[in-house]
Length: 266
Image (cartoon, rainbow, N blue to C red):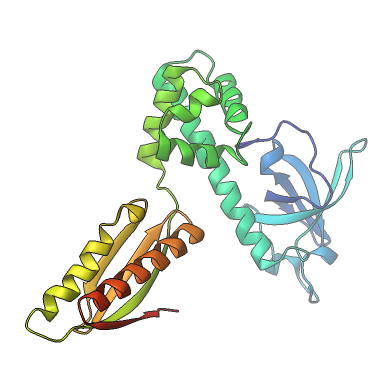
């Protein structure tokens, strides 16, 4: 669950965020942030792939680390951790996930405070769980709130007044994720109305109904070069829109008696 887990122990192989509490010559004791501060142990042999002369060169009290769970003994309350088995990409992805989890919890708490609920903790846990019912995470659900409004909450069985406040807060605090692709048109058209033909080809296609779901920016880089940028919610949508735009512009400039080509920027 976002913002804190109900389970007492993580699973072997799981990536966790932990705070270093104590460092000894043979290892470090850490509190697992997502498991109520449950204590785990990082042995010096699991700190780095290279030889560790002094563990304090790698970990220090108060430091937050992304670690992999090696073993869990629920009877003894032992959780063995590894730092050296976490790749750079795994670390980055986990930190992003954790930050989003914390933000989701904060936004739901803000909604509870705005509504003046009596038990803020119970309200937060209940609604984080509801947000996760049909979304990969509570944050992903709140991104949908930011884009589509309170109707998202109603479909999840969240009360109308709560859905309305969640939508308001999400729109204020969450910027929907976007991707951008760009390229350059090389357009020319002979005759006295050549410039008008180029302008018509670009602007008419930009205004196409098929491209209304994306944002398109165009500007000149000095004739005959015209830069186009397409901003969309995802790569697939952006690529489809750019393909549609390129086909439209090149077809239209030919109808005007001109010629053109398009170069995708890498």
